[in-house]
Picture: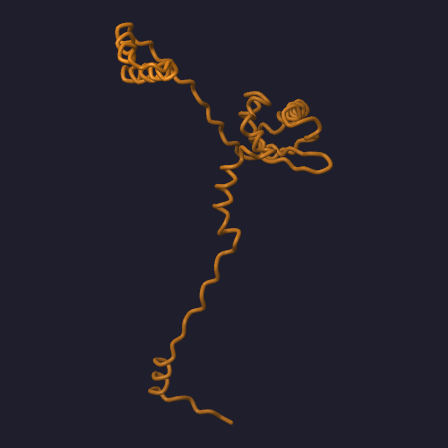
Length: 178
C-alpha cells in the first residue's frame, strides 16, 4: 500500500510538535577520570614505597652523584629475579650499562641481598634532582644585645623554657639584622 507524503503545512506541524534531543555524550573512560588523582597520590606516597620510591629519595647516596645525574630508578619488577628499571638519558645508556654490576651491588646493599639481579635500561628524560643549599650561618649577636636579651628573661624560673626563649630571641634578632 502506497502512502502519500504529508503536505508542507503538515510537515511543519510535525516538526514543530516533535522535539528530538541529541544523544547524551558518553562519559569519559574511567582511567582518564582517575588518572590525575592516582598521579597525585603516587607522588605523595612515593617515599613510603618499598621499591623504587625509596630508591629515588636516596639515589645520589646509593650510586653516587655522577650516575645519579644521568639516571633515575623508574620501577622494580619483582619475579624470580628482581629487575630494576632505570630511566637513563639517551646518550649515557651505554655508560650506565657498563656500570650495571656495581649499581646492582649498591642497590642490593640498600634494599637487601638478592633483591635485584639485573638492570633494565629505558632511555628517556631524567628529572633533575633538587639541590638544597645549606642556609647561611647567622652572625652572632653583639654582646650588648645578647646581655639585654638575657636580662629581659631573668625573671623566668624554668631553665628549659628560659633556654628555649633565649634561643628563639637570638634567632629573631639575628634575622632582623640580615
